[in-house]
Every structure is written in C-alpha cells, then in structure tokens.
Length: 330
Image 1 (cartoon, rainbow, N blue to C red):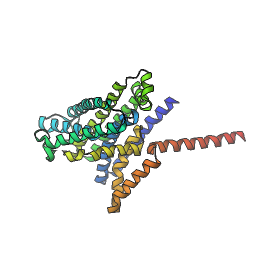
Image 2: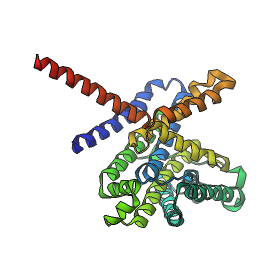
Image 3: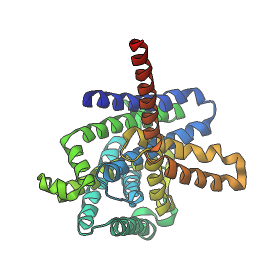
C-alpha cells in the first residue's frame, strides 16, 4: 500500500507540472498569461519549501520572504557586480539561504509554542527587509538592482516566455521530486514524527534540535532557489517585493493546496497567482472576493485542494467497489 501511495504522489506531481508547464505553451499567445504561470511556478518552489518546515515538521515559519530575498539579492549581486554566470550564482544563492536557515533554526529551538515562533520568523523577515533598504552600498537601497542578466543553457540564452516556462517548470519538477524523496526518507519520517508529538519523537531517539534546524535549512534552500529564479526572470528587484505580505501569501498557498502535500504546494502556488487575474474584471470587488475565497477554502477545504481530490477519488473507488461486489453477489 505504501509503494502504491508513493507512486501515486509521484505521478500526481508529474501530471500537475506537465499540465501547467508544458500545457501552458498553448496559451503563449497571451504573454501575460504565460507571465502569471511562470510566477506561479516560482511561487510553487516557495510553497514546497514552506511545506517542508510547516507541513512536515509542524514549525510555523513566516520568514519565507527573508530567505526569498537572500536568494534574489545574492544571485543579483554576484551576476551584476562580479560577473558570475546564472548557474554558479543560483547554487551560491541556495547555499547562502540554507546557511541563514540554519542560523534562524537555532533561536527557534529556544521557544515553545506557535506564537513565539511566529514572532521570531516575522522579525527575521523584517530585519532582512530593513537591511535591504539601509545597506545602500551592497543592495542599492530602495532603488534595488537592475540589469540582472538572463540565464543560458549550453550557450542558449533564456529570453522568450517559452524558454522561461520550460526552465521554471523543469526546476519545479526537480524540486518536487526531491521534496517527495525527502518525505519518504528517514529524514521525512523523523520530521513528521516531530510534528505529531515531540515527546514521542524524542522517546524514539529522534534528535529534536537537529531535525528542527534541518527543516529550516531545507525550507530556506528552496526559497533561495525561488529567489534566484525570480531575480533573473524579472531582471529588476527591490526591497518592497520581499515584505511580510509575501510570507503570508506563501502560507496561503500551502493552505489552499494542502498542508504537507508537495503536489498541493505547486497547485496552491499556481492558483494563488492566477486567481487575482481571473477576478480582475470585478474591479473594486476583486480583493474582497479573493479574500473571501481564501477564507472559505481555509474553512471548508481543511486538507486543501489536493486533499479534496484524494478524498473524492477514494469515494468513487469505494462506490465502484461496493457496486462491483453487489453485482458479483447477484
């Protein structure tokens, strides 16, 4: 049963990514739609990272904007000022965000309860945004960094929306499979044990400090990758992009998609990105309806869209099984 479930998750992840990545090529006639889908893929990376620390380990993290910013600015500074290529800058961005995630993970060990952890992670994101605004010599302050070069693959410059769709969703695919692999590994089982009961996990010999810090580090790594991609895609970044509202937005993504579900992270990232555009014709009512839909999904879709899909599939499977058994009994 476990093997079947793992295969199902893998196939679902692949289906979601191919549907919105490759399938969106047919929508390339509208550049804005493609732009929104690309941003949805980048947000999906952020949501995968948050799901590792919140969905798997049960630690509330409202500092994702900070890790996201570190990835963006590291990649931008290395590329613009020091002439680094995209891939070295991309890897260094992931490493720098991971190291900061380790640093933030240690203070998180000193507190118990969600409220205090929210304060620590929120304060961290606020500190990062203040540094981005005030350290003008490094970050160019409120003016941000412009002229960030596009990546290239085997001397092929990533310049068109088609290229970006393929690159972003290919990296989302790799990230999703890596996260699923983590979930199925000893690390993932230990993180889930910590989430369910710290006392029980500790009695089983699980090192709480190590796995909590590891969860923050892994989460930050995905955020750093998303930040680097965003900087090179937009070619311009500024501190206002990495506000507290960005952290809340990522949390909304995993709630809508499904807390603890990697495919749900991708779905949530895309839906939260696309939904405002679908509601744009409502004009002044746009944000009211958008917020109302998010609240309703939080109340009535407690397992997220991914959980709803799984429950629906199980319902139909049971229904078909009962009918089949009745027919055989006749």
